[in-house]
Image (cartoon, rainbow, N blue to C red; front, side):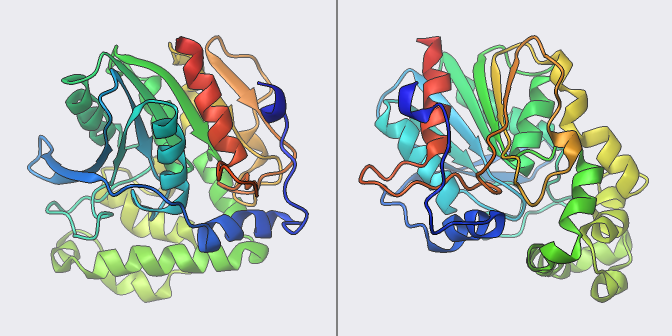
Length: 312
């Protein structure tokens, strides 16, 4: 592992916010165009998948973060890293995240492992070995799925980065005044999706949209009730992946930076888990871990590839 054993950020990224914002806004990832495929869910909705194929017998499935998509720079960077290492890659879009609003009233959420299972099952028709990588919300989704009874037996390894293991306390952290720019961005994007679905007025109070100030309020009025939870707290409790860690049966790497502006103290468990390796670098921000060098790989991408390659 050598040079990737520890992370040191570039000098110009001197605080957690720069480490978080710079990769999101300014990183450009030179990579090939994907083959897009649309598959359908058991409830007659659709999921759009981006494939990067080179004839490998193994595939890496990448799950993006809140209000992300398969073309975000952090997804492309990870996809490129695994492709260069010889793997096929599948980056999928959650319901409503591929540029086209989905059919059903439901959207995606942090515990929607049924959709991840649909994607994994689809990939299992072609590949003997499947590996999972998830960012932020996608990391929570990945770990929660691995701890459930229906996790597909062909999944061999997983990497989860910048994961809000405790959704409730992490939501309180992101709602702090110092994080207002992140909250505002997420609320604007989420609210636009709600407004794009006039039929939602039948099941939730859409008039409350313009009064919401925090993600907890959004989840209490929309995410929770729309997906079968009594409210935000019930949703957070039932979907937090921290409860899944003791039940994960395949090797998994949890990579959370200690200066992540989105994560609470609960997201750095100190106990030992049978199959989960936890690493908490001092720096990295949220979905950051930037490196400036000629190969274009970020530190987290090198870590993820090295961990998955241990199966070989």
